[in-house]
Amino acid sequence: MTSSARPPAYTMRQLFVFVAVAETGTIRAAADRLHVSQSAVSLALTELERGLRTQLCVRRRAHGVQLTPTGERVLLRARALLEQAGDLAAAAAGAEGELTGPLAIGCYSSLGPTLLPRLLYEFNELHPRVTVGFVEDTQDRLEQRLLSGELDLAIVYDLDLSPELRRARMDTRQPAILLPPDHRLVDAPVVDLAELASEPMVLLDAPPSSFHALQMCSQAGFTPHIRFRPRNFETARALVGRGFGWTLLIQRPRLDVTYEGLDVVVRTEVEPPIPEVDILLVWSQDAFLSRVARAFVEFAVDGDSVPF
Image 1 (cartoon, rainbow, N blue to C red):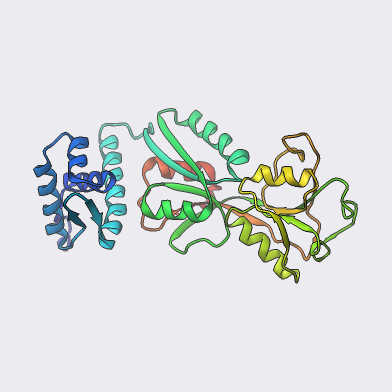
Image 2 (cartoon, rainbow, N blue to C red):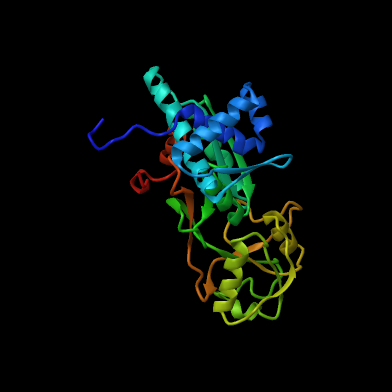
C-alpha cells in the first residue's frame, strides 16, 4: 500500500448485500436470497451508506426499496467489483488458466441469426465452463441494459451509439436494397434510390435500422411511402418476396430467399452510395470487465482493435 492509499470504507459483504437488495427490490427478499435476517441486511446497507457518505436507496414500508441516482451508479460499480473479487479468488486458487463463470451478452435482433450461434459455439468450445446467456433486442434497449449493468457486452451496429459505451470492431456490412424479383429496377446497372420514392416501402421497425433507412431516403431527397412496419427482419424480407414493396436492410443472410422459398433481389449498387456499417462489440465505460468478458472481447474481435 502506498502512503497515499487508504483502505476502503466498505466491505465486499456490504456490496454483496447491496446488490441483492437492488436486484430483489426489498429487504425481505434480499434476506431470503442470502439466508440471513432482515435486520442483518438492513444493517449492512446502513453501514455501506455511512461508509460511502451517501444515500443509495429509499426504504419505503410496503413499497420496497427504490435506488437513488447515486445508488444506480454505485450498483454498476459494485457488480464489477464483486466480479473482480471472484476473478482474484480464482487466480489465488490456481484457476487462472481455466475460465469459469457467467457471461451476459446482448445482440441486436437482426444480427442474432447470422452471427451469434457461431460465436457462442466456438467460444464454448474454447471455454466449456463458462455459462453464456444472451438476449436479443433493439439497440436502444440493449444500451439501457448495458448501462444498468444487466449485460456485460452487446453486439450492435455502429449507428447512433451512446458516448458512454466503449467499442471494438467485429465486422462490416454493406447495406442493400431488396426488391421483388419482377421489379422494374432488378436489372438496372445502378438502383437510383429516388426512383423508389413513389413505391411502397417495407420498413424494418427496429432501431437503429429504421432510423438508418429513413436517413438514407432523406439524403436521396424523399420521404418513403411506408406500407408495412414489421419488427422482424425475416418478416420484412418475406413481405418483399411477396411483392408488397421494397426495403433497405443492413444484414444479409447467406441465401436470398424467404422462408416461403420466394426469391428477393439484393442490390448493393445504389445511388447515392450507402456507406458500409461496422458491427461492434460494446460495453459500458464504467464497467470493469470480468476475465470472462475480456476473454470474449479478445475472441470476437481483431486483436489489434481491442481497446484494453
